[in-house]
Image (cartoon, rainbow, N blue to C red):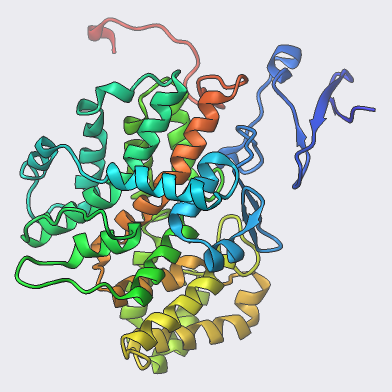
Length: 429
């Protein structure tokens, strides 16, 4: 028997709504007919209790600290797969076999170059422009160069656009960094892996040969895997909302990048690193913790807690391990900020104030330290996040386009403004 939820109104009238069940996770009340039946809307600021779509890509159980990509635990993917395998999984629903992976990697590799005229876009920006400002502009401009893959109703066009975005984002992000530093662009090489190629484009200079460090490449690869998708967050919802109007994929991804730029979203790892810099020394942690507890101080414990996770962020555990690996490889075991981070984590996890509020470390707490050790400047952190999340955005966008129930996004509102009134002539106002 189908389950139903009953809404009883003040006039005693009862309305029944279907209850939908997913493969895992909480059940959902289908209220699509609510307005037609009652003349009322629901009020849900921030969409905390609203499922805006059905999806088979990513599942999060915040209370249990679980993150699944297509059913696979993030811990297993980070340990046993590389980023392009994860991309294939998110796009296609299954992990590739050896033949599928080779074909996928080959296709991505052949799309890493960008149109030569696109390089001129960079010269239109100031050298000191924030790299995210450059990234939003350049990615949004891609539709001006790749007209042959803009029919969103054509599955083959969508596939080509997906390959182009996944392949070209590392090149564009690296170019944004090189332009910002005044160094010449470094073009991709087809004999390197995805992450190795990106690190070379970021850090190689014409004056000397760039040596790939496999430990550092693996660390970057893990960062990309951990950030590849995260269900219906703000930027993913932005991509879906933009796509619901029929906008081309390049414009939708540019919209996602713009949303991710916000400090409450993609800028959190930068904020966590800045917080550690402000604390400066482990001896100052007690005073800092005291300030955090004081609601009037304005101090915040950045990198702890999460909108969804009410347990230890599973990505944070993996990033903590990666942090150790990178610092050991570079001989930075006594790195001031990492030791400070460890001390702050210990204090916070043992303090009843934070434990009772379930403020556990999230992935941003460690990813900033890892990127800093890799030589990536703070201003580029959110660009790396955008590079990683692009595949998730594309998978979500493609799923939305293929969904027969999808409609153009149109949230409702609770209007609190003036009621109808008449315009008075200007001499009577």
